[in-house]
Image 1: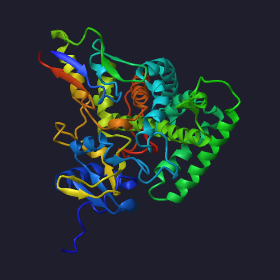
Image 2: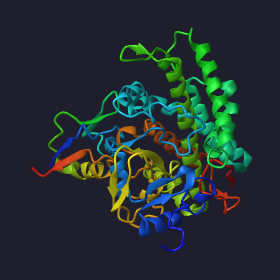
Image 3: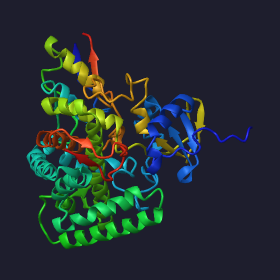
Image 4: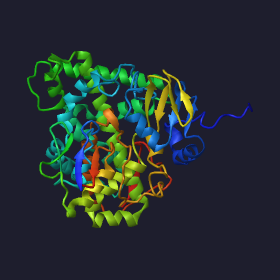
Length: 66
Length: 385
């Protein structure tokens, strides 16, 4: 599983860091990104990342299967 | 055409209309998902989650001018940044963003906790207590008053101003505007008194030193920020705390579950925000003709996005009217979405969570003195311990 944040959609709700704080980070203006090296999601974090994705109000978290 | 009044033509989302509004929402979503009400000068309304999310995220077609608020908050001055469209909007919003990130709110948490604990102890001592007056309202007043730099001696005046501007605006706009003028005057004086002070350790000080495109903010711009922050920072958080206690007072089982498992409180807070949201709707104006579910809405017309209805849309949530404190996948509209997402959402959420944690750890099982008490607003809520 790969994860990314669509920076055009993210509006800084910061829900993602509630569900997967080791995968996402928030910048000084409140916008989210995937932490460096975390784009490829390990199997034990996949459920958390899916929760972050389904709770993102802006649908700014993108998950792909490769 | 029959003489029958069209469905939704008297739809309102203020005052007594809120008493049974969840039934109204269910009916409208089912029979009239896009409708027209003659209230407040006439407005279209959207009640389906999907339509509301789409409109919120579409600032090309939906403008926030003349105001996101319907009726306005006791003033015709556009409030910065919520009543400002792109391209000017981002520069105005950007100034405030660093003050309300999760990291910034982390630094406030111990202060919030201390205030919440102190207020909860007073509730405990009283045994029979109006928790709106003693807890839900003073908490954000103290927390935000300190953060923003409102002198403590002025705090006792704030509740009456909020009541008149926010809660009288529908029934008595004249009264709301009179209070609006008083608040503008208050902040105008406060800003003038602060002009010579070179300190930036509160929001007013920060704004006095802030620049947009290299230019310091004008007195009018500063006043607009102050006015909005005052109303947004106090009332919504108080409502969210009061509404959560309203629910818990009637549901001792869930109350004890949260008391015994405080780690469940953040998810419960999301559920209270979804179902009992302080902001039931926000308005837009169509910039061009749009068609939603087959209904044409013309450029220039007002459109109300009914967050409270979207938050209970059965197409999105399983058993939407049921408050499930451990609900998963709770993507709701309590703070709006798109470029005008509530700027204080991280602070509001943290205040709500910490308030509930401290309240439940200090106060043993409680019930409502009057079970018929309304869920909405910031009016009294008496509990018995």
